[in-house]
Amino acid sequence: MNEKRFALEFTVDSERILLREFLQAMGISKRTLTAVKYEGGKLLVNGAERSVRHILCRGDLVLVEFPPEEPSEGLVPEIGPLEILYEDDAILIINKPAGQGTIPSRDHPNGTVANYVAGKFATEKIPSTVHIVTRLDTDTSGLVCIAKNRHIHHLLSEQMRTVGFHRGYMAFVEGYIEQDAFVVEQPIGRKDGSIIERTVREDGQYARTDVRVLERFVRNEMQYTSVFLKLFTGRTHQIRVHMKWLGHPLIGDDLYGGSREILGRQALHCASIGFRHPLTGEPLMFTSELPLDLLQLRLK
Picture (cartoon, rainbow, N blue to C red):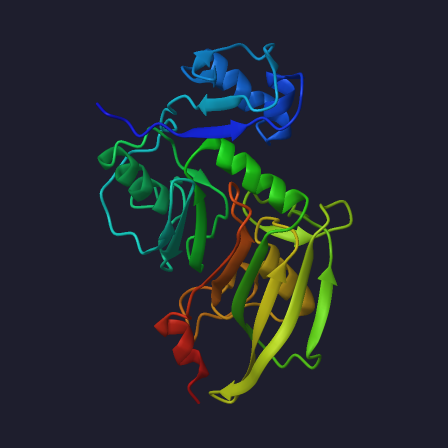
């Protein structure tokens, strides 16, 4: 089988540096280097295989061939529809519909984004497992970023941890929010007695959500507000928890106090993600329009 092995090439621009140190400076983690050594990858310097202790000289050409990755246990490759907004050798941007899981779970073991991406990789002979960078809840629609290699996943995770990774959401919440823009900084942790629900609690993890009001409207004599939310952290159910804490749960989010009278799922959509390409450094921004069920909430 002719697999499309992932490889990166670098030109050395300094004198007498260990191959290990050079590759770490290029953003390749110790864990990835260990996988290259023991799981079928290669390190080539000017076409010859070398160990990480090899001393490099200026102008040397270094090629890193990454090992093939086995699909995650329990992830069954399936052929199914994927709305692909962008794809290259490193990343995949998917527009996910509401009702589809991002990864398999007890309630949704099949038909998830990960199942379909694994099927795509198998069909195209891409020897990689599925690395979800930005995961969405099953009933949240919108953009999902997927890395096509563990090294790319590492680089994007570092962006999220250090220099930022833009994640913008649109939501429809219950009630009238008076402030036009504000910041919610409230720690989030697991709710006592629940394995699913989260809550604001003093001993939780730091979480920040920026909120900007887009529109205030009335439907069926009830007040609602549409908002744009920017995440600075990625805690489980962060937006849903913060909006409940504010007293404005998402429409349709019955887990966190929202009513399903006018919508059968939480009114949340990942509308934009932005980051620097992990290999080229090019700034990238992707957007997704609101799906029909959320657009219809605006109808008076």
